Image (cartoon, rainbow, N blue to C red; front, top):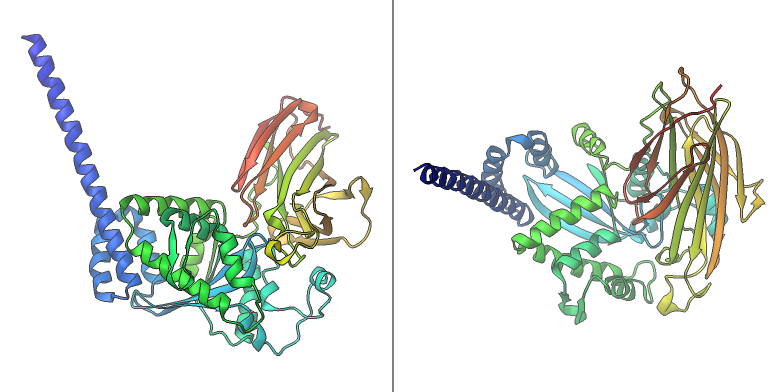
Length: 484
């Protein structure tokens, strides 16, 4: 009798558990359907359908209240919105991710996408009549005597760069917008991988993720000149096909798309900057704004450090396709001072300094390197392959962010390795005697996938390796530090 009751109890528990999961799956499936319908109504410019689906979505997702409110504003449910999307080639690395070869304009009216236009960056660039003096590294590299829109994503702090980018767009005849987004090539590649092969009828060529870059370069750069339509036509055709694929995606594909977007946002391959304070605060809180951020200062618990390495390829090539890097950081603590030695190894796997046209994305890596460290850093010393660098060093202070930038040129020839060594000291501003901790904030540059960062604390006999894919905070407990 007891055995029978126990079996009945198990059956009831199993049945209730199965019912719970069935209801949960049904709920998630319903949310998925409503969300997809809301997205489709935006893309297809169907405001009435959006309002109906979005109201249902909000009832199903009360836990996303802030996001839902901002989404309605983003797509212009109550007020028309216009955005520019910078299409950046991260194989020609720039501070915000890559060279801005093209851009897209998005217009929303009453939560409907009424315009999606792809344009060559050289169109507004050609309308600029005002002379703008370039930053000295741009002048050194290009010897042109002017600064243009295509090189305006110069600042490592994306919100600051956007101010310059907006100025160039407006001077180039582009209308004032409600926000700017930066999108790296890596994002499009991930989307292509989900829906491959992508067939572009006019080009009679299937596109897959593995050959996407080569095909795109072939159709956008070969025989290119400012004012030609080939880049615009190809990117427009690609965009139209990808939009069609997304609108008709199945459940699995949409899950893959959400995952790809989530990863690219975390890796800063997508950046946002909005005029709306609410939207901007949201993306800042999510770390999607590309801003310089030093969150920690010395305290009784730890000595705080900060590092952000920013490459800028000024070689007018796509050498970053072949660049490998590794960072080694060696730390010592002596007499209340943190002594830091940062070594950056670059290896250029490109075979030719000036490749022929079919392989023009390789070559000499002409890099204006900026290493951002704590503002308190002093006694800075820079060596390139063991030789002390004494001139053409740019020191810039971001006092409000407690950050100092050290900038200089580094050239890495094909099939060569170059080693950069940066030493600096930082007084430990703490009020307690050891033991304390060491905390390192690492910011990762957009456009880079990942790189190994090896940390050695000599006085502690500690060593660890971090594969940097996202912004990271590393903490170490120190057994004993000679601070005083």
